[in-house]
Image 1: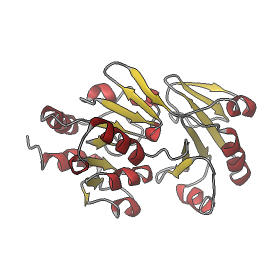
Image 2: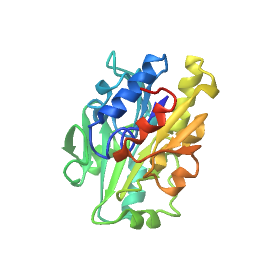
Image 3: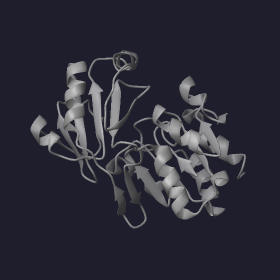
Image 4: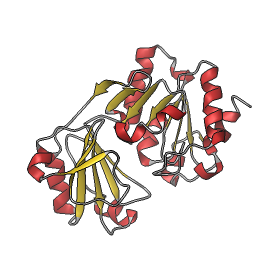
Amino acid sequence: MALDIDGTLTPVGSNDISPAVKAAVTRVAEHGTQVVLCTGRSLIGTTPVAPQLPASLALCSNGAVWWNPVSDEILKHTTFEPGPTIKTLQALLPGAVFAVEQTGVGNLSLGEFLPGDLWGVTTPATFDEIAATPTARLVMRWLDRAPAELAFAVRELELPGVSWHVDHTEAWLTVVPPDVTKGQALEELRVSLGISAEDTLAIGDGSNDVEMLRWAALGIAMGQAPATVQEVADEVTATVLEDGAAVALERFFPA
């Protein structure tokens, strides 16, 4: 079972999982199901959430970083060179700020983000310093812009050599290594564990969850997810504020 964090287990930007959702996920694990967190968050952003659940693995940064929360071991770390992507985005989106993940520590930032935007230690850096830092995850915020403005500005954008997506709640863009998606990472994990494709379930709410929902035999979208995400899901549950993940799971593992 693969679970997104922001907008699925917690309200966006929060680390608080409701008692109902905790109980529902725990019941699933007690029945022998592998619980995997699959999130766009960096590893450092995932660490406050993972101990609250019986998760055997966390696929962070959309699958670029695999982390075992029990042993605190990084099992896989895929990176790319962020310089060319930053240059392209700077030319298209004046006023944008950028940060590259320093896995397990925080970020190097080019420009000043809003309070609470970044997890861990944030260290200001020059373009040359950031460009010379291979990273699992590059994030960009277009300051003082709405999500719809960013979506329109990048509608014809091509970023070769990386995977990327735009957030639906903020003017925020995330870039990860090429061919890295939640769905791809989960399929690799499924095969390595010998789990049948028919025995997979995923719950998510964002554009970066589309591949994950398509991957799962049962893909469940949260009630507040955009229409484009709900359309690819097999089912739609209640919103995150209504404990939608718990509502979906209670059908299979009632209290």
